[in-house]
Amino acid sequence: MKKVFLTVILIVLFVTMFTSCKSMEELIKGKVPDLNRAFTSEVIISYDGTEVKATITRYGTGLWSMVVSEPETMAGLTLNYNDESVVASMGELSFEIPLEKLESGAVFATLFRVFDNAAAMNEMSFTQTEDGVRFSGNVNGQDYQLLFDPAENTLKSISIPEAGIEVKILSTAL
Image (tube, rainbow, N blue to C red; front, side, top):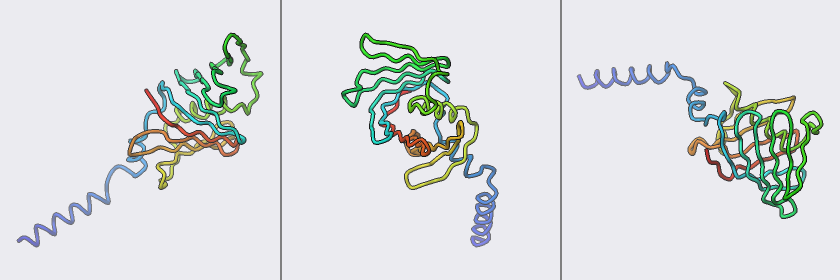
């Protein structure tokens, strides 16, 4: 009787495990943080041999602020980005640049476009790596990757290989 009962239990477990309604993608996707929200992050942006430490704040789609803290020569530079323009200020000096006049390869603008694109996506392709879960996307012909730590449920880095931009997320506050 015990053998029959054990066999039935094993068959039920086997059938349940292999006919689950949720795919692996749905299980992992459920653990990825909602990107479409306001947040503030401490980041290190690497581009063309230069590293910039900054605080970036996302207020909503197309509404960003970035305050540079390192290197010392750029410390205090503030960029306020919206759908129409970028306002750059440092100390008493301030000027506004319409987005149509901004170079398409501007590092901060590329980073903000990538993040806004990822936040608007309902589904993204992903791969599980030893570093975490890597999601891939494309905006304006540029591929990008977002690396998440599934255990902490946090974004760890953003990579835009074609533009040579790497962003390490040090901390995030919602």
